[in-house]
Each structure stands twice: as structure tokens, then as C-alpha cells.
Length: 308
Image 1 (tube, rainbow, N blue to C red):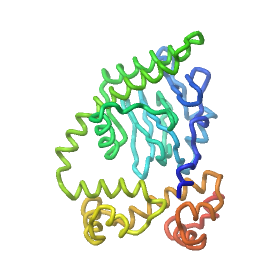
Image 2 (cartoon, rainbow, N blue to C red):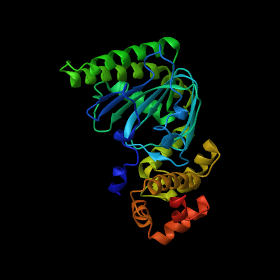
Image 3 (tube, rainbow, N blue to C red):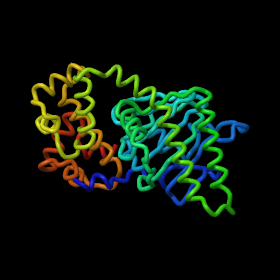
Image 4 (cartoon, rainbow, N blue to C red):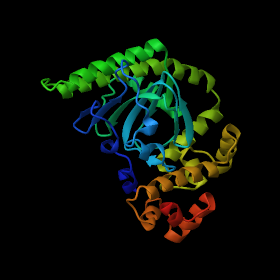
């Protein structure tokens, strides 16, 4: 249902930041340890960060976000996959992703850039747009060199200085310009990885599996049958099931179930919807059927999970 797209558990205005952060019209945030002459904050003891670091529940993220790790480590779960950030790791999160912070080291130093989903970066270069899509279909972390990290930081700091100037009149134009430059830089950094992926992923089975996951992410709130995804890929359900198991070691039904349950958990924990509404948003026939489906996988009822 279209309502699911409006789920707003974690929006741009709920991100914790201090007085040094650069915020522009609630559409853009640049925050973190940009000043390397100061000791990094211990985010594990920052009260404003605790709701995001200690919760055992996932968030539905309604904006684009990039975390650049300068030191320490950070472990996150994003759309069922776990990632660990270290020095020079750039984690890219697209709107609609479901994420959860699992662990953060006391010496972790992070630069955060967040951009509202309605702020459009023009994809004038079709090659660059294809590179970004191919890269993010496979992974979410881009590992940089010291030189590449320094170049990204230089752009961040230049943009930060412009947006923090109270007398500067053309902040919107400057922001758009710098974001285009950053986007092009990231396209350039992703390109070699995409070329390597293309060389490795010549197998038809891997391509089918990647397309299955892409379809699943888009349609899991409405469709739970293998037949639907097989039809989308112009395959038989039996062949799709065989391919998914051969590539991933897991059955297609397990992938579908896990994506549905992940969405359900985020909706339940948002505090914005009743169990009946969540059941409707995930296209279950009724609340009872949703409850059975949820309990069979999670081990408790939706009501018990919501109240944990």
C-alpha cells in the first residue's frame, strides 16, 4: 500500500546533533568531528545518541545518509545485512532502508551527511547513475584510501564553511553545487568496484538472484508469494527457488519472510500504527493471520513485541 512509503520512524529532524552541526532548512545536515584539532566525542556516552545506539529495534530511514568513519569502528545492520565501518569506510544509506546501530566503539569518529528524500541531485550523467545503482545493489560500504578520504573531507569542510556563514546569500546554490561534485566523486570511486563486480558476476544465476532481491525490496509489503516474484522475472517458481538457494544457501521463501518481518518490526516499533494498521499496510488478510505469521517467525505476538 502507498501508506507504507510514508512511514516516518526516523526522519531528518530526529537526528541528534550539537551546536557545531551544519543544518540547512531541515533538508541537509552535516555533522560530526570535522575539526581534527579537537578530541573526538565519545558517542557511547552522549545522551542524545542513546536512543539510536541502545535500542534493539530497527528504524525505517526516510532520507539519504552517508557515514564517513575516520577512526574507531561502527557495526550496523542495514536491510538484513551487517556492515562494519572502520577508518576510511563510507557507508551509504538510501531512503526507505531499514537500519539499526549494533555497536559503536568509544573512539569512533564519524562524519554524517544527511539529505532529505525530496532534495534532488540531478543525475545528468547516465553512466554515473548506472554506476551508483549497480554498486548499491551489491553493497553499501565504499572503502577509501587516506587520499580519497582527505579529498572528501576537503569538500565537506568547504561546504560547511559556506553554509555556516550568516552573511552568505546563496547557500541553496552552493549546496546544490557541492552535492553535485560529491556525487560525481563518489561515482568515480565506485566505478572500479562496479567493473570488478561485472567481471565476477557473469553467471546468469547471480544476476537472477540480484534481480530477485531488488524486486523483493520493492514489493515485500504487498506480495509474499514466490509465484509473484517468478512472474516478475519471467521464470517458473521452481527454477527461481533453485537459483536463489544455489546462490545464497537460503530458500526464496526465507528471504521473503525475513523482509516482511523486518518491515513489520520497524512499523510496530515506530509507535505510529496499531497492529491492525500494520497488518493492513503489509497486505495481510486480517490481523489474526498477521499475528500467526509474525509469532511463527519472531517467537512472540505483535502485541508482545510492540510492548517490549
